[in-house]
Amino acid sequence: MTSQQSPAIAVTGLRKSFGDKLVLDGIDLTVPQGTIFSLLGANGAGKTTTVQILSTLINADGGDIRVAGHDIAGESDAVRAAIGVTGQFSAVDNLLSGEKNLLLMADLHHLTRHHARQRTAQLLEQFDLVEAAKKPASTYSGGMRRRLDLAMTLVGSPQVIFLDEPTTGLDPRSRRNMWQIVRDLVAGGVTIFLTTQYLEEADELADRIAVLDHGRIVAEGTADALKRRIPGGHMRLRFADQQGLEKALRVLDRATRDGDAMALRVASDGSMRSLKTVIDLLDERAIEVDELSVHTPDLDDVFLALTGNPSDRKVTAR
Image (cartoon, rainbow, N blue to C red):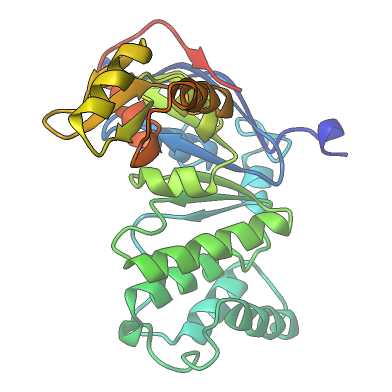
């Protein structure tokens, strides 16, 4: 059972400085196996440094860090054998075909010739690159290049994959295709550690999200739980006439006018209970509403509310 498995990533007290600049100030992270974990933060918050440490590219100054069950300080080779890294900038060789890029990675992983060709064929099929397999990568579209880049990461069958800005520069259709590929990988048991500037991407994919600010984790939880921590949720009621609006304004305690529109805003946490309460109050007094919509904070609101100001308080949402 998953509850009995050790985490794919377990970090306690991670610290890192560059000269006199403290970049990571004792962060803690736990990523269960077979899940998608997203690390959000503004530029310079420490996301890239975190990924570089977890993928053994640079050393930490302090902390206990285990990836795929291995201590990164004492078992770095074992960690490297268990992970894959797909960076923001493609590692594809433009002069080689998609197939030869994959065969090159297979050679670097010391696969036998038979296994290399078998694995290459499998990945070309999985990432819908069979028709383009013999063509130079320089002729690929942005979406095809990102698919090839991720396929190259998978040649060694990693347990944990670090995705750094995986859909930067992709059009909406290619971005959604990449999201489905990520979901399929996780369904197959792979763990994904995702950093992204697209908050919609984290909202769409991540099982849990951590917000990194000034080198510290200032919030962690599911996307929905984090949104509920941020004020600003409301219902918007639009009326056909001024009379209905005035009657509703007297009945609803937390209602305010919505600008010059024939509408009111009523503070709400977005729950069915709060929605039913408002509808029942209006119905009891025969107040007709032309239109009702529910607005809840999104991850943009969470990000803006939690980043930009140093804080000693970590918000945990479940």
